[in-house]
Length: 181
Image 1 (cartoon, rainbow, N blue to C red):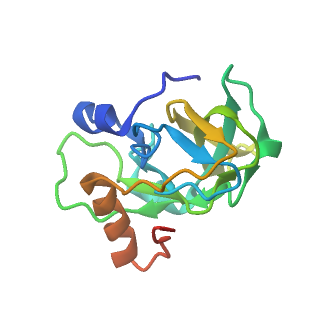
Image 2 (image 1 turned 30 degrees about the vertical axis):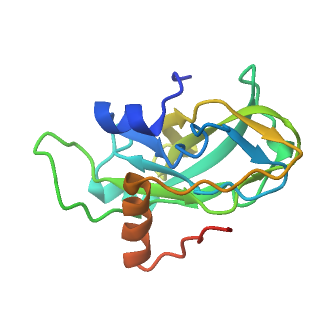
């Protein structure tokens, strides 16, 4: 289930059911990050995972997986917390056609150890107590490619859309990292 990478701007205007937020940082002019530095703004996948309802929120979790330029997983190069529980987002505007409750999965301290070109895929799972499988993959989304180099790279500021999601999470009592700069 490999999807084409999307940017924050494309995702916002096309309004897919599920998207990765906070990738404008990777879409900046430099399009780079420093080796070992926490990615900021943090990676946050948000939206309505396929086939889920509001009742599923307590049973949803996600994992972040680092992919190299060819799309191969390179988990040994990703540091930080690469699993996250679902957070129900309080949305002001609700579409009558929405089939699921908007949720977010925040990865506040991801970092990448080595230079290279990468993307991060977020896999969303629902705990499955019925079939005995443990968990079922319900959705995936991927950032666009970005470069990591062994040099200092200035931290990017979140866009207004990104700040809005960060503010919603803070308002709901979640620990959201501040800008390192």
